[in-house]
Image (cartoon, rainbow, N blue to C red; front, side, top):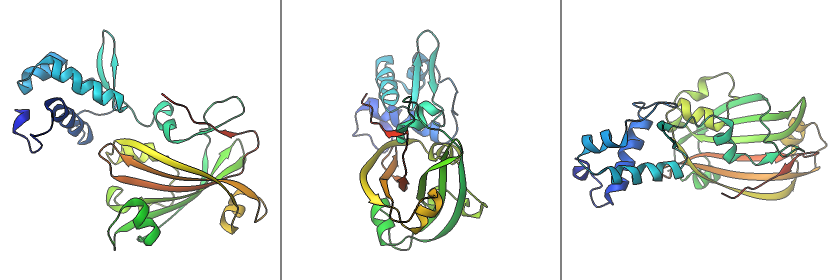
Length: 240
């Protein structure tokens, strides 16, 4: 059954991985749901349990599912701090990820400019949603964000009065499964918008984070440039 699909030249376990991922992204299996047993999936697809197991191992390595000994395989909730925190590397003085509230969330939309097209790999004329907001640590602003999202993946998002949700929350709402992200770090000086959002003088040195996050199938779904005014916080990278 699986071998009759479009990507029949792919290894069989990857075809199974794609099939399972498709059912997750289309909402057949929602976050927290338990997948059918390996033997049942194998019987449905007419393949071996070992092939199903290898496919699920691949999805677990990609943070899409979790295997629980003696219980089964479950679809991950990508909005949990443990998974959403993969893309946020600022930690407090005790090393804990910062998950404070945001404010502002100013939303606008329009055709992508040249820089946005390049970073998000969009064709000319493609629409994007732009969000400007400030993240807080307690009641102190520490990060000013300018976020760009391809409108095609987040329909009608620009109609909201403000957007404060993290990317992981939005991805789950719009049926996107997040994959890899990349982020460059540099030192910059605060421009007028960042300085106003952070409550600091224009020209103050800040940490600049330039991040692109992709879905599991490689589509760029977020470009974020953040200016951070750190005090007791730090940028931390953890390796699996």
